[in-house]
Amino acid sequence: MRTSINPKLALGLLGIGLIVFCAISLSVGAMNLSVSDVLGSIFGQAVDQQTDLVVMDIRLPRVLLGVMVGAALAISGAVMQGLFRNPLADPALVGVSSGAALAAVTVIVLGGTWLQSWTGWLDSLAIPLAAFLGGILVTIIIFKFSTRNGRTDVGLMLLSGIAINAIAGSATGLLTYVASDEALRSLTFWSMGSLASATWQDVAIVTVPTLLALAILPFFARALNSFLMGESVSYQSGFNVKQLKRVTIALTALAVGAAVSVSGLIGFVGLVAPHLVRLILGPDHRWVIPGSALMGGMLVLVSDILARTLLSPAELPIGILMSAIGGPFFLWLLMQHRSRIRL
Image (cartoon, rainbow, N blue to C red; front, side):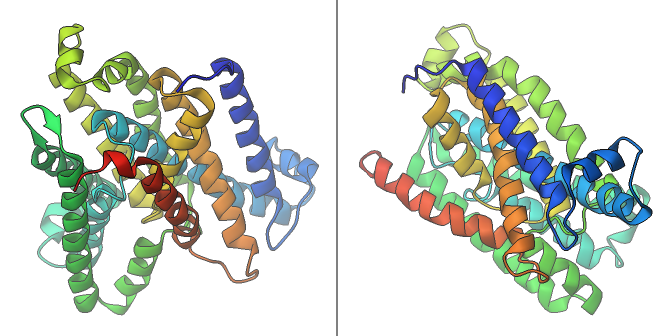
């Protein structure tokens, strides 16, 4: 797909759009605030203590968490689509998010039993680390299962993703059955996704791996571009294919695991954001990766604003809204690519 839009200008506009939605998200809610009130709190000149509390302790960590979670899921989707050479690849659709969530739920439900001796010394890092390991394990299984003779089979990848989602759903259901009342409240958060309990610690947990992925993955952009023409072409072009697979899989699993560990399951961001960016900037991963990060942050922020305001003062789980957006988009995507899909 060719585009006449200057990529740097388009990325700049996406960045401005993200800042605008950050300002809106900081201003709207049960207590509406002006932009000057928000800026006053951020720069230490709050008009009153209540405004400072709302901005600095509730809304700012929530906004930053939404931006980082959206960026982590979106760049993971963009890289997986390039690595699998499949426009339908998405961390949630192929089971990576489910695997990360299942590992996190296992630690929540069984954390007070025999698992305590394994996870107790990790303290607050036990759940994010479990989510990371769950995500990377599922990613490796899918990649091994769907790749034959160096080629990734679309049908096998989707079917293995469906099977893993079903297995993870079944295991999560079993854990829900044996969970305590306190753990059940946490499981609702994991199954539907939410930013409502955002803290500065959550922001730190997801920011570090997301920035690490954003710093390293662009160095593999040209290799991913050549990988789109086939693994053998990429190898003959001088790229280290084995290193490409290992590093990109590890970084995407790390980013998805961190995002799921602090926000629960928020699907379709990794599917929708990269495709919207490709419609604007074309398929070059040099622009798709940073563009997806900005677009993913915007999508999650818009969904979070709607989640907080549509049924105010009640709040909808953000995962429900993203599914309402992503489901029709996925059907449209299937219609566009149905001639290429052979199950």
